[in-house]
Image (cartoon, rainbow, N blue to C red; front, top):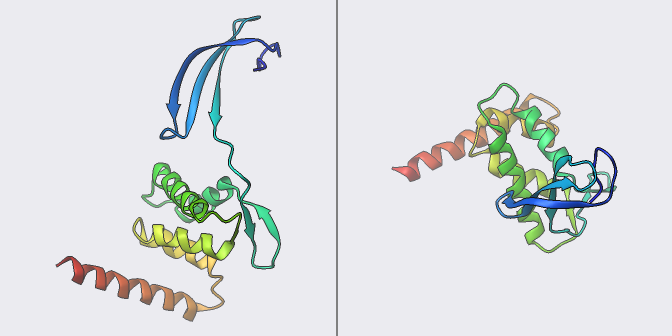
Amino acid sequence: MICPHCHHDSSKVVDSRPSDEGRAIRRRRECEYCGTRFTTFERIEKSPLLVIKKNGNREEFRREKLLRGLVRAAEKRPVTMDQMNAIVDKVENEIRATGENEVKSQDIGEHVMKELADVDDVTYIRFASVYREFKDMSGFMNEVQEMMANDKKDKKNDK
């Protein structure tokens, strides 16, 4: 591993521990030339996952892009970064579990909305308004009414 300080190519592992719920190994290293300590992560290499956009273009799935969308939707809401990261993890794992190398962006959006519905109603509506591209107030109202109907069903089932 190349030292980020002196660029020497010899380092030793000082400490290793699991990270990211066991999906990565965090290693503390020390450069054998200058003594600088730095951290590296070892992860399983995953096959590329392509997203098929609405216009038919394909691009590589980037969890950072999905997380950015969630952060925007959850702005000034009581949704933690841990919750948003958990949603992205769950959505990515569900998509990869299908075994397909390509997924429609609509499918990703549906997975996210399913998870957001249980976290925060306002964040859900914000995300849905971008994802579903509401053209007018009626589309927005239909989504809110559907959400309220589902909420009433859930409350009846809880009794």
